[in-house]
Image (cartoon, rainbow, N blue to C red; front, top):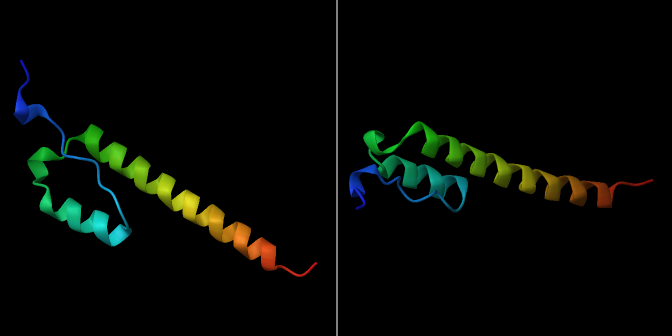
Length: 64
């Protein structure tokens, strides 16, 4: 027996703008603390990956 009212919304995906638009469409009562924490962790992980790629690119262009 599964209660559909206790299911979390799907995880946010895509760019910052995509995630923001998706978040705006989800009713506040459906956004549990656990779900929001998972979305924050996902967004921070994606940001860190992008930042690492930018750092690597910048270091590759540095004159030594």
